[in-house]
Structures are given as structure tokens and as C-alpha cells.
Amino acid sequence: MATFDELRSQLLRVQGCGAGALELLEKAAHQLETPGLEGRRAEVLGRRGVLLLQQGDATGALKTLEEALGALPMGQSPGLRLYLLHNSAATLARLGRVEAAAARLDEAEPLYETHGYDFLRAQRHWIRGLVQMKASQPEAAETSLRTAIEQLLALRFGRSAVLALFDLARLYAVAGWEHRFDDMDALFEELLKRPAFRSLLRVHGSELIGLARRKGVAVPHLQELMEKLERDGDPPSC
Image 1 (cartoon, rainbow, N blue to C red):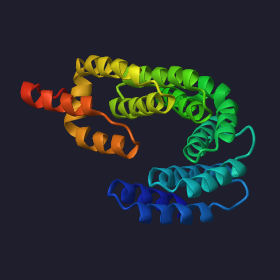
Image 2 (tube, rainbow, N blue to C red; image 1 turned 90 degrees about the vertical axis):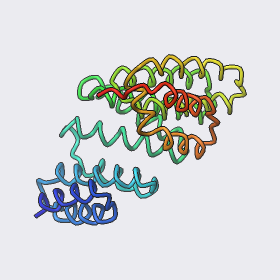
Image 3 (cartoon, helix red, strand yellow; image 1 turned 180 degrees about the vertical axis):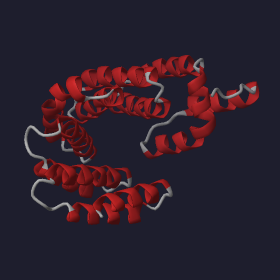
């Protein structure tokens, strides 16, 4: 029954019914409270924690992810342990718990090389950059965020790269490095040469500008690029 509830939760999630998906994952996790099924229960709890994080409930996400880490037996499923540690670090960073987030990243570091996949490896630099920014380490944060942006672009995760770029802009504002915004303009111009980035702007441009505003980042250049795309009539790439 747990597997059936998991499948139903995935369907509800695709349909945009997050509350229903969370309820089914909680039910599935409860059904897996059986000796010998600790790894499966940790997996389900991990998916529930990530869904909570995506829905903005960082506190609930952290509680669920920590429960998943506690349920997973030591030495079992290192790939799953990395997934849980990674998302726990991201959640702690979002909550401003800098030292705890850094500790989770350090714990996960050996697993990134042996059991991580490319997106996770790139995203860790993004998380570490946020941790360093909140720890008042602007130079280190800039290096981490720029590394994340380059790796995400190389992997064609354009939307994530732009969101990391917004965090870099926020870092410049917080650190008082307004003069470096010229570098941001140059980077946007460079990105515009990439068909995948142009397609991203066409599909998600307005959404990205809204996200930037919520982050407190002014991105007039992004709006200009969207207008330029409309004037040029450049076809989106497949």
C-alpha cells in the first residue's frame, strides 16, 4: 500500500495538488514503520521534506529531513544519505542557521564525489555560497556562486543558473559592491548568446523578474533583454 500511495502522491504533485501529495507521503511513511524498512521510510520522508521545502515550509521540511536522516541506518544507501544531507543543508541555509548548514555540507562532501550526480554537485556550490554570504564571507560567497552559475549553465539548468545569478546580485548589494553590477550586465549579455538562455527568458522571464523582486534584487537589465528578444524575433531553441 505504501508504494501505491507514493505513486498517487507523484501524480497529485504533477497536477499541482501539493497538499494531497504531502498527505499521501505522510501516510506511506507511517505504513513503513516496520523493522527492516527503515531505508524505504527514510526515502519517503526525504521526498516529503523536499516537497515541504518547495512549498515554502522550511521549518516543516527541516523537521522531516532530520527525521529521515535519523531513520536511515548508518552505512545504508549512501546516495540517499547524500540527498538528505544536501537538502537539509539547503533548508538550514534558508532558515539562516549558517553553522549547522555548513556542518551538513561538510558531512556530505565525501559523498558528492562518490554518489552525487552533476546537478547536485553544482547545486552544493550554490548552497555553500548562500551560507558564506550569511556568514559575512563575501569573497568566498562570490567564488562559490560563480562556480555554481557556470556549472549549472554547462549542465543546461538555465533557470537554476539565473536564480543563482540573482543571489550573486544580492551579495553585491549586501556587500556594497555596486560597481560589480557592471560584471552582471556583461554576464547577462554573454548568456544571451546561448539559445537555451533565450528560450528560458521567453518561457520564464516574467516569473524570474518576480522572483528577483521578492529577493530584493533590481534586475532592469533582464527586462531589457526580454524586450530585445521580442524585437529581434529570435526563435526559441528546442
